[in-house]
Length: 151
Image 1 (cartoon, rainbow, N blue to C red):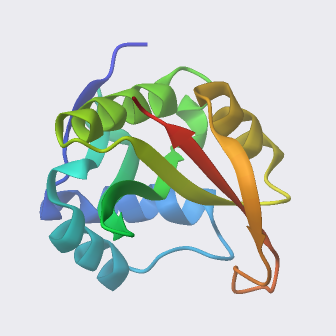
Image 2 (image 1 turned 180 degrees about the vertical axis):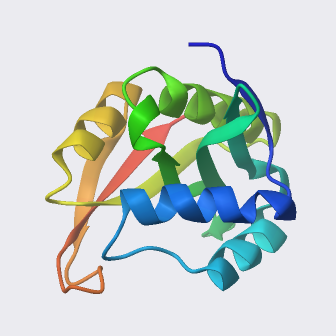
């Protein structure tokens, strides 16, 4: 399925929120969080368009750990009607390309230990579990911390 990737714009917020709420109904980011991520992450906040509508997004920031830049995937979601068609993979591959151009050699993320589809997706991209964050989510559930080397 052909999608066009581009950087997020504030006028995309309603469509991103629609996808966020359909993907994470119990632990969704709010609009203010997305605006803050947009201001912090800039051109690493991407959307995927298909036939004029947004069908997915990803937001990653560069953070510093021990003086080294590390990519941190804050969120990714694809409209349920467009899942398993390569949209998420395309978003992440473009994110990885941009991170490499910034000299980032490692990416990390947190994913719910009960999110089997998410765990499969991240493993298929090369992420490996490195720890658990107890009580990470609003409902008290744990997150698996995963990392991947880019270079």
